Amino acid sequence: MRRLYHHPEFSSQRLGRERAMGRLEATVNLKIADLDNKLDTPYFHKHPEEKQAILDQLKNLSGSVLSLQQLLFDLDNASLQTHLSFGGIDPGSNAYAILQKSFVNLWAAAVAEKGQPLISIVAVNQLTDPSQLPLTGFEHATNPPRDDHGNIIHSPTLSQMNASTMDHCAVNHNSLPNPSPFQWNWLRADQVRDISGVISINRGTYAKFLKDQLVPEIKRTCLKPTVYGWNTAGVSHFRVDFNPGDSPQTAEVTDSGDNIIKIEYSNSAFDDSQMADVCWVEYQVFIYL
Image (tube, rainbow, N blue to C red; front, side, top):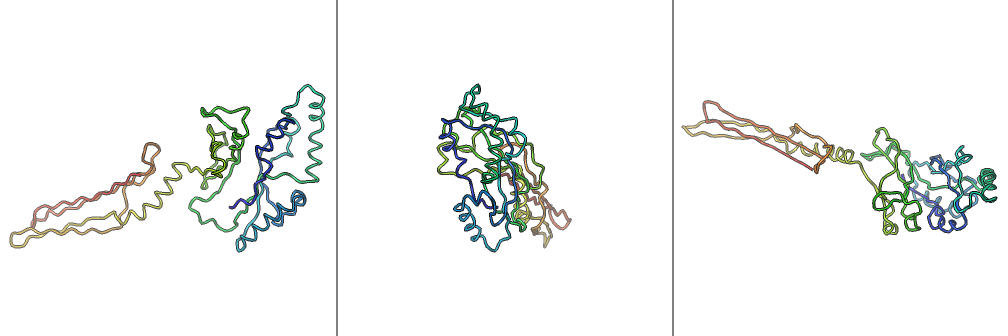
């Protein structure tokens, strides 16, 4: 998956400029929808430069079987009818009453003419994903800015709004948890110019990935000993052979603590034949990560 487009007008700078004029506030869902590969939509008909820039990127991805997906605000649902408010405008004013009465119709007309504004577009590879951690499920959510104590900042500054993120949850064929807000900011305001985003992998998922890669290699060091003893002219002799390829008795992911993986192997052998003294050999491998 490769992101081709991110709408510049959803930046906090624009929101900040509009704050003095008033702003629309609504609680709506995000949705993913398929997008025509030729970008034959009302929105891109009105934005030919953006359209051409994306088509140029698609040419650079030639040779791959791709489809396009768009991330949108779900502004066609019933929530627009009942959950609208207009920040910066006196709720008791005539302007507020007119906006509440007329906005949905005005919005519908604008969408019909200019198209639904996009948040982002991604090119999705239709071939089998070779990754050991394939992205099989997604949830999209925006996280409100928070202070250093994890409290929501209800009137964020422009720099704090700039650090807001679109959060994605992806798992390896596991059931998705219910989306819930994070209690921290993924980016600080002073990191915005240097960092595009953050990837966070669950401890257990990452540990299992490492364990599955390590165990086949560690088998080569899991040596099974065999002891041979004999006596020649009153002198005891011993030989120990080690054969690789045994499996560790313990290979597990831990739920807590400093170590995330525990791999343990031990084996022993002895020869107590009457022709030689007793010989005991014990071989152990302990790996903690």
